Length: 355
Image (cartoon, rainbow, N blue to C red; front, side):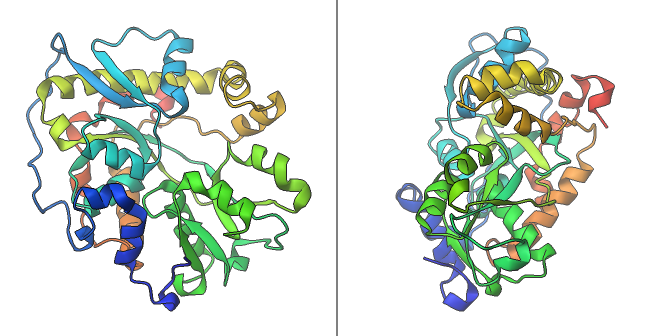
């Protein structure tokens, strides 16, 4: 169902529809008025142990097995703890549900899922940040569409996931184009539904990752589907974990040991594009070498700043934007960051990747 103020559908109901049956089963259907303050667990400020105790394990997300492949190709040292499971999940709502069920300890996401988790009353904190400077997303049209710019989104049906990076990219693009929420129909979907919604004409526009666009255009470009570039940047690529995990000294030490590997894996990928194109995009994503090169040309050089000040500012702007639309309640995002980990990523990479 299209969602806009004009439609009269309350945004709390919109949130409930996105959370779905899993969240309802967890007693979240009435959480729209709550925040992480309700039933929250105090975050530890204790020093992180310098070594990882024997027998420590973590359950880590690795969407499309990216992390394992990076670590393997980069020949990084063995982690000083056991990864009991690598979960092939990446979408923010799925990660939050996995956190809640205690089937996941550490995840890689963009900036918006921690905001959404806070709004749902779940305590989690950011432990590592990679800043991105170029857009990771673009807007794809349904087949046969005549939409040529973001200004043309007025009156159209737009795929929108409030708990994912694609959602904030869309909201920021609308704001930059001078469009209000009342000017468009926001259709509540999760990102794994975007392609089907485009193909069927359920939506006119959906934000797609740069890596998704080539395959979509290959299939539907001849039928009039096309893409619209945006200069809106989704600044944060981050690691985050539940407070209950971070309060466990052994697991906190394991996370501190994982962060350098994560950062070094991203640096290796940036420095070895030809190998990554072949091993990941061609062999696992079934893209052509030419398509892989086109995606890599849009890639962001990793940047691990010693200070999180820019990240916090951007995260606050994002939370405020969501609050303006009635999607979340206004709050101070500073509480989403665990500064015990702030220096780790930057210290693990060469100077050129710190600025």
